[in-house]
Amino acid sequence: MDVAHCYLEGNADAVEFCPHDGYQHVLAASTYTLQEGEQPIRAGSISLFDVNAEKGNLELFHRVDTAGIFDIKWSTVGSNVGPLLAQADADGYLRIYSLEGCSNEEKPRGGFLNEVCGEKISSSMCLFLDWNRAATSISVGLSDGSVSITTLAESKIEKLQEWKAHDFELWTTCFDIHQPQLVYTGSDDCKFSCWDMRDNPSGMVFQNSKVHKMGVCCIAKSPTDPNTILTGSYDEYLRVWDLRCISRPVNETSVCLGGGVWRIKHHPFVSGLVLAACMHNGFAIVKIGDEKPEVVEAYSQHGSLAYGADWQRAKLLPGGSTIVATCSFYDRLLRVWRPKSDFCCI
Image (cartoon, rainbow, N blue to C red; front, side, top):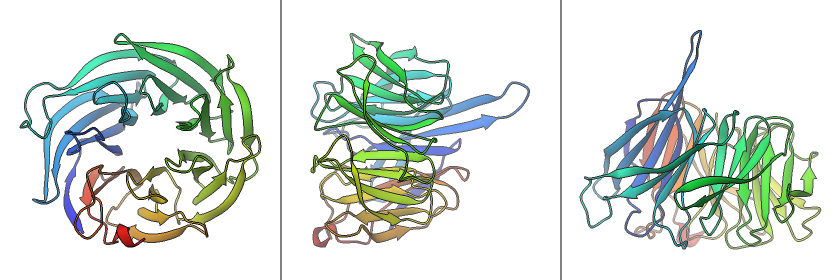
């Protein structure tokens, strides 16, 4: 069921609900727009919205212009820091913002996004980022195939490691939440890799180049099962991997979602339930169980490339569903909706 929608000022590529207590009504959306010419300009923005699903409200309360953004992520819950929003952009910068003055107890006014620090970490474009569980490090995928491991200390970004992990664009990187010394990467070279950061430069744990038929777009470690990790690819398949033999993971099963699998988001409360952005085929909610993954619901109310998707971290609504935000690229559309499925019965 549709709750609300709006159009952004640029091409929409990422949406992220703030996961921190008191701020779970805050939705961040980012854009990337290429202005062609003799000297092309890659422009972007971050918009903050107040989402009230019960009233059907999607209220813009803050917007900041930036370089063209490829990815944004809120800091993880359970760390010693408050809500921080990280930005990876086309100018090679990693920027960190703090969120102020818009908790549930406060009306939207005041400082909102305050830039804590920003650092040009590469001459290549920053394509993707991931916080570690302690919110002390950020891994960044770069357009030259490298991965950069950074740390945030005393309001300053420092580069810990950087190495050439792949031959082409590194679209995704993911810390292992159960084994914090490991980081996973995926690239346009069709390779899915794992690295041990205890070495410097990080040593390869495995690299699979045979399963994905096209570029690897996203990687998502299961938050509840330390032996399961998911990958999404341009070849339209969401794949489930068994990591019990970490040096040789096994692709147990897969499901075709009818479009390139650009993003995967695990449900915050329901184990084995994921939200997928499927590029030319809208969005899908998929159940990952003991058998073959199953699409339990599809959402096709966008008219362009399905890129950004996220679950709201608030408690399950009456009827057992969770509010979802999705965005599509060329039509600049942001939608907030409520799935039809009763997740309590899945």
